[in-house]
Image (cartoon, rainbow, N blue to C red; front, side, top):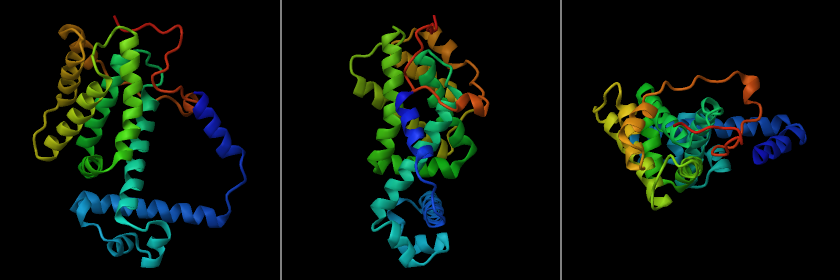
Length: 240
């Protein structure tokens, strides 16, 4: 909460962006979106910077003003994907104080988004495999949920890193299977239930938490200053 508020204050209290800065931001965003389309269609190893220029409809020199290598483009796309998903998960789970349920909301939203947008799913999987930034950004939120669940006595695991890998790579594996044609309407609930059981939640409770309806987005005003993920209110009561 504090960190978010400080960051927000810095952005809003600083000098107004000039037209030049705004144009640069738009151009960079256009390049990132073009790279995302190329990754989804061809894979990480196929991108050429001149192809990126063509896809974004800019000159080769413009691309080099923002990215010198394919790795730099990949990093930017990874951060963009992670930020978009993190913001969405935070928006719908802002009022949830239960670490186990927060974890399942994130997992299920990954699966739902992948089902709705295969191009997005393909890009996420490919970037996740090659880039540390997207893993570290997603892992930050996931660690908070794991620690909260452990603190509340809802989750039980011997190694946080192993628990994190279990959730993250199981989710990516499920999305990969979906891209290969293996999917079921309740696949997100099944995965969430299995992960909770793997993290020490009794079977009946795991099923109940995993099959709860996903929360709906809050009004914009309620999201003005979202709390930091994994930081419960003092009055919160965990799922029993």
